[in-house]
Length: 308
View 1 (tube, rainbow, N blue to C red):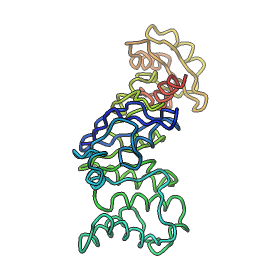
View 2 (tube, helix red, strand yellow):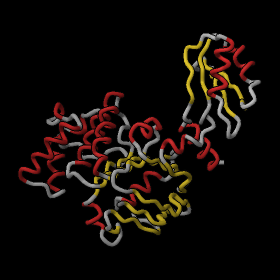
View 3 (tube, one colour):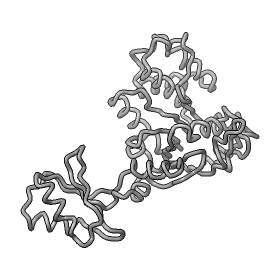
View 4 (cartoon, rainbow, N blue to C red):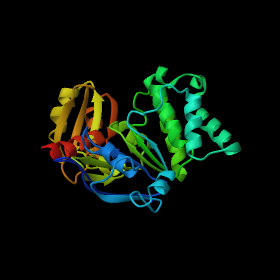
């Protein structure tokens, strides 16, 4: 278990994290969301022991980060923002160095090194100096050092930052596989990543917790939850007709996608009535589906309100 209790951090007069409390249990992948400056990285640095809290504390696997820092750190793997490493080392030398620091030795060390290099796809750059690597490869080296000792808790700050789409897919697949027997906390601003790998999402702004739930729970707070989107040639006619249906609150032209979205009144459902009208009018429809909600819409609504 990771238990965060009233964690607070001040930098002079600026309050970066404001009495933040939450728990994360085994098998959970927690997406830590927030705009730039929300306090995500600061919180992770405090939980991992890299930054001293102004007040409050956290426990990792029962070890208090202030009273038992070494025991807490042994249970964790941490990918910091920017994936810092020793640039004059080769990838092989750096991972060997990290394995030694983590107390790995013998057959177990060799097996973990080989497994991690294969999982993170670093074989082709093992002999290359880290300061000559691309941003994507440096990120992968950072992820490799975080998991080399097979920790029960993983704290990952922007794990796919700088990766191309194929590399992002590989890392997300790796995170999903590891999540079966680990606690994983991911800081990200990529909402697609939360939907792809996270079982739970928290939104913070100005260091305060604003929302906490499954991605589907949060998406359900969106005004798009239950809305019906359709794509058809007779878009203008459909907009006029569908607007008159009794349970319809609003009909919006989605100009970027050439679609039409029909929003229900609170507590109402419009899929059946929209489908019936399409059949009655014999419109030729290319797509028609009910939305579960949009996480980006909820994110803007919650963090925008906090900023205001």
